[in-house]
Image (cartoon, rainbow, N blue to C red; front, top):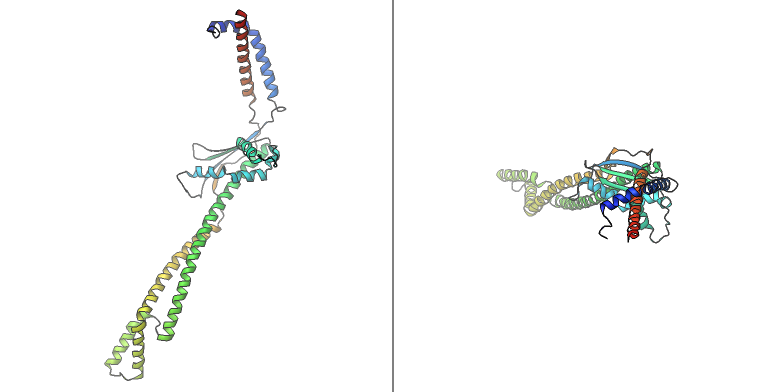
Length: 316
């Protein structure tokens, strides 16, 4: 077997069998050209779109484009595509088949690709037998991507709306409780505003004592109110201080609530379309010249091995 692959022997054999190789090559070209035609291999058309992420939150170490691709390649979007375009009929997969989803995903992933370009855009490529459907599928992927991200954002914003509303309700309930306490202090003890009344009450009481009207009815009222302030003043001061803090907290929480609610209500897109998909006017698959070239080279190489084997046996 040492001389089986001898270079000189191979060259001599090629020259000797040159007409055979020509015939094999021509037959291979003819057959591959015929069998790679549309009658045997249904042509596919490619539609391409390029999109750039916007208005999304970075949630991990991934870039915005990588996060976009996570959504674009999600199973939720693929299942929506199956339903909208009835891809089970296009791919000829029986929905009753126990491996239906596996088969559908395999074919879909073969025909639909989404990846990142060197310029951080996401490129979506769709191959399909119908050029218009390929373009529509690209458009639909972009549409479903926007809806998916919007749904995710709305769920998150709804959580924040509910949380801020819950805290806001708690603060308002606490404020209502303090208002009831103040009403009690007002009705039972005459304390309307501790900070404002205290200096005025002290001044009036001291003036009444200085004027020697300790037995007058007005002075008795002042003394009674003064006594109420001594008993309930600390409580009134705490309630008023707490109410001031609550009002500030309510203002802050209201601002947060309105912000989250506006985010929850707004409708925006989450990508810029850099390149819109269009129906292709030329098929992308199969590449006939590549099939013909590969088939011809393979046929000629195989025939060379056969001729070498025959020649070797003949010499033996």
